Amino acid sequence: MKGGGRARKLPVVATVIFLRHGRTTSNADGTLAGHQPVGLDDTGQLQAKAAGERLAGVRLAAVVTSPLARCRETLALALPDSAPQVDERLIECGYGDWEGQSLKKLAKDPLWKVVQQHPSAATFPGGEPIATMSARAVAAVRDWDAQVNAQHGPDALWLACSHGDVIKAIVADALGIHLDMFQRIVIEPASVTVINYTPLRPFVLRLNDSGAPLSTLVPRRKTRRRRSTRDSDAAVGGGAGLAEEVA
View 1 (cartoon, one colour):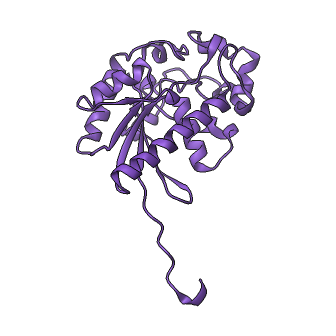
View 2 (cartoon, rainbow, N blue to C red):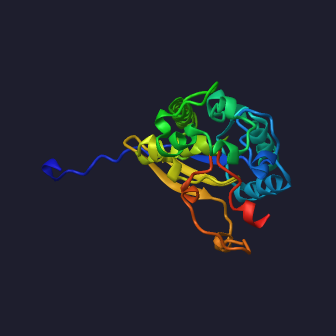
View 3 (cartoon, rainbow, N blue to C red):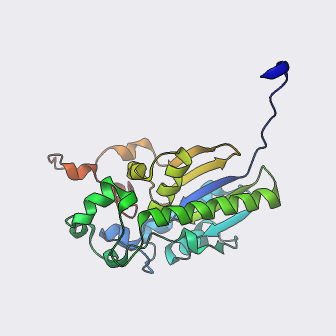
């Protein structure tokens, strides 16, 4: 630092809270919903209400959502007094011909390995590239963050409700890691992830925070099985989360 002067303090900026929608009937059935109008199951509704309890008292400058029904339903239960603004760029990845199919069946498709190991090169038949999904979602978040910061000041908090793979891609960007690494990130239903975008770099303040007790990490399966390479696969679409074990 020249001349022994004091470093100029960078301005604080708004902070975004990401909320993934609650568990859906598709999550519970092990199918890939994509853009289909699936709703929350009973567990998902409880998750959404619990998220609302966690958000109680948090003053939000803006609430933005994916246009899909499961996100709208989650916000209706979690933040019933809010008036969410829809941003099409926060919609689920366009899985195209994969939509509605069983994840077990899709795991046998040659494209599955690309989605798992080299997602930046994956394009879903009849759908969109994962890289395109990532770019639109990151652009949406940065646009909204700048708008909230300009209109409501540096201490503002705002919320975006979206989908597992979408939030994973946003987190990967915030962490400065290649999109091919985004499958290492887990975003469970109704979990909260918090990012603060400063002028120089983002800070991930919370990640996949569901408020669940650590006991949910203990497997509840009664029968033991041999581990396989399939255990290393990420849950395309985000999966059902730990609720799959405890519901």
